[in-house]
Image 1 (cartoon, helix red, strand yellow):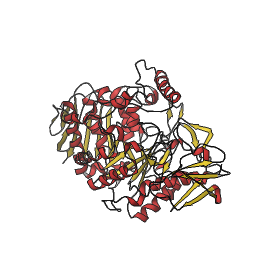
Image 2 (image 1 turned 90 degrees about the vertical axis):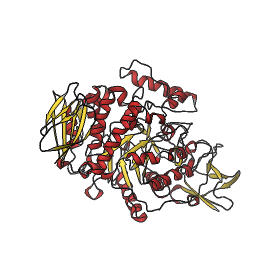
Image 3 (image 1 turned 60 degrees about the vertical axis):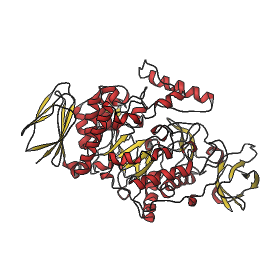
Image 4 (image 1 turned 45 degrees about the horizontal axis):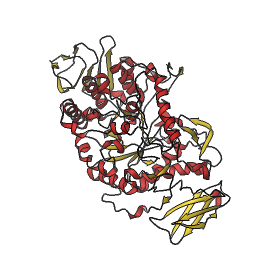
Length: 577
């Protein structure tokens, strides 16, 4: 027997079709409906008929959509999977962590959960501690970034479905890697979202860049909040993820006395205690507001960490000279230095791109509350041609960037292929089945970049070649600049793991000096110095003490007792004895 429940306050009459047979559902309290079907169980297909609508709809809480988001749901029993690793497997502290963001569809030629498993030993040997997987909740079509998910409880079938995802997390833990899942709670995808048939999940009076605002504070919001919180708990409990990355929380609108994120972090904390293992929440936020990572007992949202774009933007503009869009606000080495010391460059100052003052200062939060990166899916994929840093500024600049990211006070995040200067771009791709939607996405992409003054071709997101071009070429690991870049990342990651000073997020122990005109920067952290020359000319810098050269990004770096010579666009790491 299986018990089917659904929240459907819009229904006056609700029926369920299970394995081809029709059954009535009984109304319960708070707009919920119930049916107990003796013949149903794992593998049973089912969908719903609401009121007089002859169209059957899948379950908003479906755990399995084997035939896509428009088809019937299928019952999935979480207890049937046999785990090979302990339910109390614990991830390292964030301060000791290095995250690696990957997209299942492009990480390997096959683009599946099982195919990704073969590369986990490589990531472990590289020095990665956490594998962060871009969203896998079911979305329409054969491929996509995953941020248009509509069946939020059901892992994408093309990737391997529920069992495939469990095998991947199981293999991560068996390899000694934590698993992080990117989840999207600020919107549903534009196609295949049937929640609105059953209840008011979305408020169309307001909008995000991706559609209507999720209903977190209006009529029926208690059930909608429960929908998303239960979803988070499912990934952590039933799939044993160690952390969730919450997409674009700045798009959440909630005026409730208890903010949705505060309620979510409290629920996750309770589950963590029950499971006897650390469970973490990492938020993406462009608000530049430390309330995100402030503990709940101090009036904050209780997130364990958040992405920090200011560091990326400051470093990217220094290396590339780009000044379009939000890069208008950045470009100086002084701002880069401030991001290393203070996290947010804009913590109350006037932001030209926003035309208003923006942000609040980070007071006591450690650097390990923030992620630092020079590449991620947004900063590569939202470029017109998905080009990576080394294709914009060259290999030398990419080595300098890696040096600063991996010796910064932040938790480093590496984007797939970054570590070997992958030749493949990471483009924006989608596979909408609806022709009108396909045309709209393609045209919208062209208009978006035309508005930025882009005059070149913009790859069509709906062209299968755009997806194919974004796949990594693993044979590059042994070739030329790819191999030398990989060697540099391995060296940097080894240093980070070997030297506690490089994992200490105490920002009060960091000093940063720089010269804007000569374009150099020196960051000191408890006896470890990172020296960066962003100039096209060599630099000779004074060094205090009796230093040892731990790592050099280029040939020609010379060290004496009180000076170091840096060639153009190079970096070095010193230990002061």
